Each structure stands twice: as C-alpha cells, then as structure tokens.
Image (cartoon, rainbow, N blue to C red; front, side, top):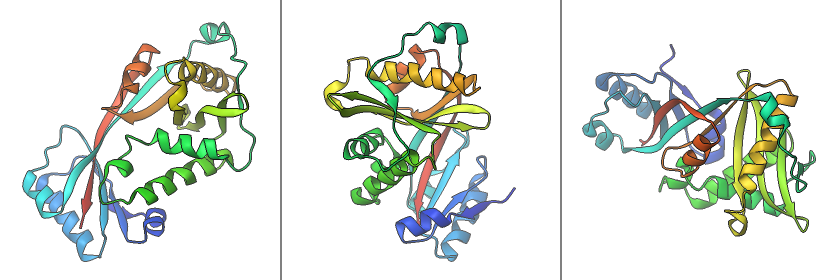
Length: 239
C-alpha cells in the first residue's frame, strides 16, 4: 500500500502543499518517519484518517503540530421498500434544477459544515471554509458531486436541503441542513424520507451517511434506523 499521496486539488485550493496518509494503522515510529518525509518535501498540511484503536503518542503530535480534527462516524441502513412506499410525499420538497445554487443553498451548505474539521481547525481561515462549502454545493447542484439535491421550500424560500449520490453501490447522503428558523419542525425527517424514496427509485437499497461523533444528528440517525458501520479519527498535522 502506498504510504501517502499528495492531494492536488486540496493543494491548489489552499495554496500550499497538502498530503494524505493512506494506511490507517501505522505504528508510532512509522508515522513519524512518514511525517518527516512529507515535511522534507515541503508539505504543509497532512491528513491522517487513523483507526481509533491505533495509538498516537503525544510526543509525535507535539513534534509535528498535530491534533485530532474529526471523530468521523459512518452510519448505514437498509431501506424497507414497503415502509417507504407508505410515506406520504411532502408537498414542499422538490429536486433543485441542474443550475447554480441560490444564496439560501449556499448559506445552508455552510451551516451543514459547522462541525467539519475544516471549520474547527484554527489554522484554516473562515473564508476558506466557507469557500469550500460553497464549492461543494455548487458542484452538487451542477451534478458533479451529487446525483440530485432535494430542497424544502416555504414561501418560495429554500429552508432545507440534502444532497444525494451513489457511493460503492450504496446511496450516500452528502450535505444536509435545515435553516435555523425551521429546526424542530420535522423538515430534516421529511427530507430524509424523500431521500429514501429517491434512492429506492434509483435501485439503491442501502444508504449511508457520515458525520462527526459530537454532532447531535447521530441521535437523529439512530432513531431513523441507521446503525454504526465504521469510524475513524482524522488528524491534521501542520508541518
């Protein structure tokens, strides 16, 4: 297995060299050697999605300015076709056309990333975080990152959204957010029910969603029948 890779897109976006370590279970001395090798290549930022059970000594974190940026959890559920067909469609939900996103969608995209490692990392300017999520939404509505985007509208204003795609034979939820003024009104639930229908219509009988362990949405997903599939700890090292 290749130990690491230089991430060309990330490097171009941030304006400095970014790399990702591939192996999730490196021993302490090995990870130290890889980080030093990347530092010698003038890499500035390194991501490492580590197995949660793999130890990482504090001395390495201190030496390479590393910290735990994200406790990533991925949930999966199998869709019940009979149950899904009995759910009434919500009149306020529709597919966003293949076009540029409006400002409400861009704002919702930023809101969806409030627990993101790119938001919580103090070394990443807030401007770059917002730009990143604007790009994610733009590439979703233009159908580059997503197969479709479902939106909830009220008085013609978009107040909720979810982006959907296929990943390794499963349906996958990307961005999801509801406007602050509408939270607690069941909009997220309606969006996910419509997402289930869309996935089944497109021949996908399983769906996955990734989020952060500290995100309260994990409780919501479990109530909807999602079960934990895998987890990882993502570290950022600033060299």
